[in-house]
Image (cartoon, rainbow, N blue to C red):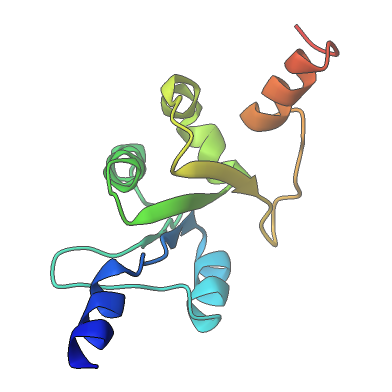
Length: 126
């Protein structure tokens, strides 16, 4: 019985985390929903304030894409626009990057690189 229990515990796959890069309201909402994860060395979220340097956002995004425990990265579209050059070079499937609106900035599908790729595949864009 104990061997069977141990075997089940060691063979179960653990789910991946959702990471968030965004303004304070967006990140706080997701943290209150239970998405936050913090260890001694890292977190799965970044709060971007008006005085946050673009290099910090870029470094956090790159670090999140290199982690094995993250499956999805949610990023506010207005923050994604600041690191668009990094997003255009990103071509991995997992973690998947999804752009989301914020309270202050509405979603624009024309700026979303995933929507641009979908449009291209469907023959609607260049």
